[in-house]
Image 1 (tube, one colour):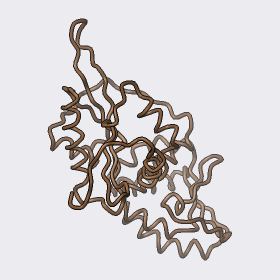
Image 2: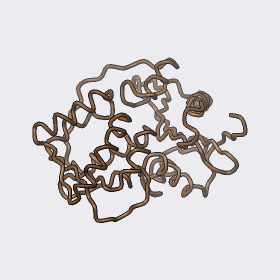
Image 3: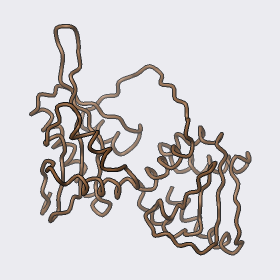
Length: 264
């Protein structure tokens, strides 16, 4: 934590926090979402937000939510759930995530919490860190879900994947012609990676059928070869196809595509 300041939330910095979360997640949300999750949450305390600051710039964020868990009519225990953990891209891998994790648990203990909960993808960096620090997996009954807005699910998944893998983000930022289409939504992968939009009129469009989305739900938690294999299966089965108005751009993108695949 050399030269960095670790502190609690200060009223009036909501816009800076939301801008920071949008930088880290691709698009996290708007200020009203942050207000609902934190200041408007019952029993909110300024210490429920842990901030890491570097010379006035926010470079780390973690939020805490406290709840009473009733064990019986006579007894209950205070629990804490953590979320919206984010580290500035240029500081990732420097140990700041661990600082946020340890500080949040210490603050939760000081507030009287007896149990801490976390939700994340099995096998992810957060999962591995939590297991190392003493979290245990609680078996739950099956959970069933139905995708009712495929386009929104696809965009959210892409943003999470792209901004979690720096090399993939860099490779896609260079692919100005590449678009992903599902239903009535067309996404520029370069824009999702944080690059400025450049409308040259040349488009290489990967069109995915909506019925292919269930196959891609676990895409983020798979290994590289599982991801590449799933993309190949989509093309073979006709659930994905490529369309372009510029064959030259397709050839150029094909060479760059090896870099994208290698960064998956």
